[in-house]
Image (cartoon, rainbow, N blue to C red):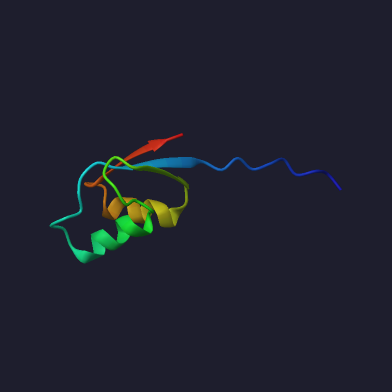
Length: 67
C-alpha cells in the first residue's frame, strides 16, 4: 500500500487590534471563542471554513495574517 503524503495545514495568525467594548454580545463571544483576551494578543488557528466565518463576523476588530 503506498504511503500517503503528509497534508500541510494552513495556519492563520489572528491579532486583536480593536477593543470589542461597545459592540454586540455576539461579537464579544466570537472574540472570546477565538482565544483572544487582550489587545494586540496574537493566536494561531488552523485555516478552516468555520474559522473564516468567525473572522468575517469580527473583521473590523482583528487583523489576519497567513503564516
